[in-house]
Length: 134
Image (cartoon, rainbow, N blue to C red; front, top):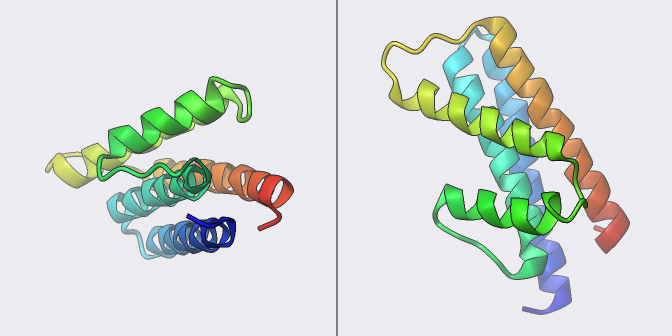
């Protein structure tokens, strides 16, 4: 893949992440907390994919994206270990909210999910702008 194509694809994925984050905030305000947790997670997921474009890596499995991002960007110190914790919590909460019929998430928890996703997106966007001039 040409460098310019990587830049364009990364931007599309980052835009998708931002759209998911915006949806998460809207859903909190309409008291759809489980759906908000879903959107917060997907914001994180697509942001990781925006970075992995430059490694020419993608996967249909969430575990593959998470594992590759951790290996190449967290374990190497490019991003802090705190982001690994954010990924774990986002993934776990999204899984429970999507598949556990009796899972309850409070407004405060959904809002925290949103804030953590925003923090991760901000860090990834800064990294992409600095490293790749996106």
